[in-house]
Amino acid sequence: MIFKIQKFIDKFIKQSPKYKGAVDSSLKHANLFLKEEVGETQDALYDFSLNEKQEGRLGFAYKETQDSEFCEILDGCLDVVFIAYNIALQMIEYYKPNISETKRIKLLERLLDEVCESNLSKANADGSVKFDSETGKILKGANYFKPRIAEILKEYE
Image (cartoon, rainbow, N blue to C red; front, side, top):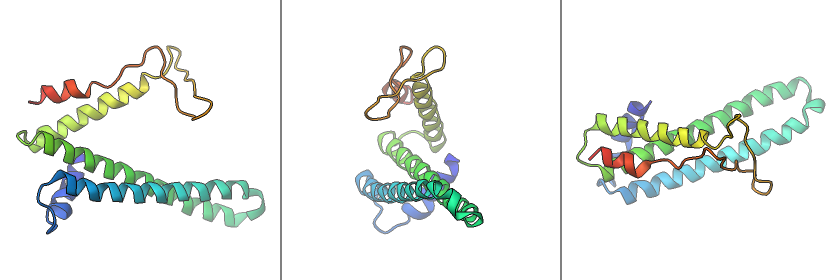
């Protein structure tokens, strides 16, 4: 997947007349794309939740609407992932310009694994999680560890 994202960057972003390798310019555009996709996905989720409440009254038409909204939500979520990968890859390219493309991709995969493991470490020893009653966020359990992003970046110097 990361190779496809790099192909997208090379094909569309770097060929843009405005692209000069400046991370701030490309990140500004990525930020706008991310805000747009997150907003559209939130709207679709809201519409989906409203229709969920109407399920009993809509009958057969509900299933068709549900499938369409589900696909829209899934498309939005995957667009957000795509844009986030793009941003991360650009950041690595900017801050690690002397490493090869292959190493940048391996670095991104390693960082993603580290962040995933960190997120999973929020669970308690029995696998359960506790939620903040006000925000709904998962609280960090006793086994939580912060992702070692800086340390991993130093390994690629």
